[in-house]
Structure formats: C-alpha cells, structure tokens
Length: 528
Image (cartoon, rainbow, N blue to C red; front, top):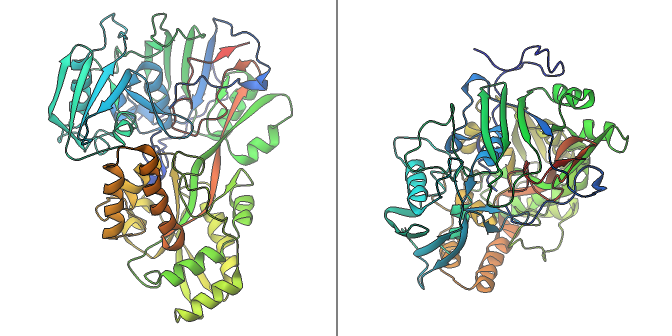
C-alpha cells in the first residue's frame, strides 16, 4: 500500500512513514472541533507590509497514506481538516475563544423555547458558479446524519430533527431540534460539518466546494494542489496556488522547511522549536491553549469514589514542574478545569498549587494512608510518559505509591475509557459546553472520569434552556465550581501547538488554537 512520498526527487526532505491517526479518540481532532471571522494576525516576523498577491505555498502535514480522501465529512486527520477548510465552508466556525461565529450563515435566530432556529445564508457560490442554498445545507446535514455512515460530525448534529427541518426559501433554513439548545451555533461549527452541493458524492476526482481554493489535483498520501478562488465570498486569497504535501516524520517536515522544499510545517516538537526559535532561519509560531493535559480519575470506583482522595490528588501535583518537564515548557499551567481562555471559562477561581501537607491530611481522613494506585499511560501522545513519571515522583513525597503502567498505542483511548482508575489524558480545543455534553453527563459516550450526577445533568439542561447569555454563563460557572472542588479531571496544563514557517510567509494566525477557524487557514496568508 502506498503510504506517502518515498524519496520524491522534488522534495528530498519528505520521507515515507505510514498511517498517522490524529492522536486517537478524545485526544485528536474530534476531541476536537473548533473559528472566527477576524483576520489572522501577521505571520512570520510579523513585519507586516502590504499583502502581496501571487505565489505558491507548500505546506507539509502528517498524512494518512493511500486511504486519504477529500470528502470533508470523513475528515479525521489534521491534514484532512486543513484541506477541507481550503475547499469547503461551514455555516459557522469557532473563534480563538471557542465562541461560534458566522461563516456561510449570515445570522441565526431562535424561537422563544430554543427548540427551533432560523438560519439565514449569506450570498455565496460553489466553485461551479451555483449559489449555496438551503437545499445544499439540508442535504449536507442529512448526509452526515445518515445512520448507515460514520461521518465525523454525526454525534454533534444529534440534537437536530432533520426530518422536521425545512428550507423556507433559497437562503433560509428552519432547523427543528429535539430539545431546547441554547448553544445551537456550536452544532453549525462542529468539526466536519461542511456544506457540500446537493447530491454530491464524489469528492476525490473533482470536488466542488464554496471555499477559498479550487481543486486542481489530488494524490492520496502524497499531494493535493489547489488554486485561488477569485470569487470567494470572503475575499479572494492572496496565494495563487496552495499545495499540501505529506511528511509523517517531524524531522522530514523540519528538514523540508529548512531546505526550502516547503514554506509551512505543521506540528513541531518543543525541542525543535527551542532549537530554531530566534535563530533567523525559520519562524516558530506557538498557538496557545491548544491541548488540555490532564490525569483522569474514575469517580465511580475506589479510591477515587471518595472526593477527599480526588482533592488530595489535585494537591499532589506541581503543575509548573509538569509543564516544564512533560511539555518542555511549551504551555501554561492548568487549574483542574477544561478550556482556559475559552468562552465561559471560570477564570476567577484560585489557582491551585501543590500542598503535600493538606494532601496527606485528606488521605488520612479518607482512610487512604499509604495509598497505592496504578497510573495508565502510553506513548500515544507527546509528553504522556514523561508526565506519568513526574507525577509518580511528586505523589511519592506525600506517601502515595504510583505505579506507572504502559498501554498500547493502538488501543489506549478505548482501554482507558472503561478500564483502570487513573490515566494520562489530553483533549484538543472545543467549546466548554461541548466538553460538558460529551464527557461529563451521565449519558456521555466519552465520559472518561465516570462523572455521573443527575443534579449536574440538570444544570446542563438548565443552561441549554436559558436564552439570556449572562444567565447561562452563571450556570456554567456553577458547574465549573463543582468540578473544581470534586471533579475527576486533574488538569495540570495546556500545551502549545507549534508550527514552523519560512521567513517569507506572512498572515499566519498567532492566536488560533488547533482546530479553530484561523488555524491552518491559508486564504489570509501571503508570501513577502
């Protein structure tokens, strides 16, 4: 099976490796989803200057071999998402603070009970010149929701009653929902919820979207070439051409960037960033708050069914030591809550710090003196094994014996979802509301901490039926205070996502967590 460029004479820095999944399970893109209408800040050297039209930018991403597709509803890898973003549009997408902002949708308005929403479409056209209509929107969402298919955004669109939804006119869609949903715009911005033409099924030979770039060619596992869409509703891109190249090994991406075979390299390590930052050869871009780093405690079984033990573990952690050691300093400390810097984040709570005496006291009260616990980890994600070793040593200072167990990279996420008591965990960016609904409700399918509380479920439903945003924020703050006090996620940090660019590249967003609109957004990029 062909799995990527093997000694391609055009790009000697690109090497073959094999299939790379996007970190798997809850830790990858789908743990993901995440846009804003604001223009990205200046890119390399931010020296700015007037944007210049023309030129070709080559971007290196890890890929998926011969199984790759341009079907935007099947996107799983970061490369898939970047290509889909170039060719297609969503109704909404997430800004840097993970608040949904309009894209193909010009506006959305709910009824008084929040179970029916009216979406007005902006004037936009597909690459074949046909307008984007309400019929295209309904076709796209019904295709995603097909029970016989496994499209990525299916779970996100579950609240929609698509049989009862209808096209009011060419540019108006009335969505019926199964229950009140105040955060309905998050559904429109869901990862993979792209709008395609009514009836479209073939995306790999000549895909037609409404995005900033038009299709030229595609070789799975190797290259995808696009050209500027001069009629793009949000303004024609500066670049004349954009090419995505597959380079699974980080060293291949870096060497190609250094050698001038590419101008953009996705997903670099903190070690690489330190080696090249400020040296003048390439530019390093750090996208802050892109990935939550945590330990997940299962709250439905000993020893973590006792909230005193969970609080003690919060106090065992030296968060700065974890960020410095496991992330090589490329991140910020956490405070046991998801979504630092995102809309609705409870940033008024005191920053928790290590307190070994208080931790010992709590463990003694819980009858857990000399506690022994197994911490599951794996090389499935950067920093996991390092974080496990660091936390083991931190816990030992309070008399807690942590045994580190290495799990399989292939099955880690599924294994730790149900088994064990304590594990290393990470998540990509998503709205805080989505974190609640996907991971912390009694019926959530990816509830890694087994947090099952009917009163917490009721608070979520209360938030979803609260139309006033200020009042809804107050409910979310109450939910977060509960999690801060006794939840199952020990959130110790938030990792940077690191990119590299040639010094000629401008317009790359510096405030765009991975999976948000301005991440890997090439229509606002130019070559100086």
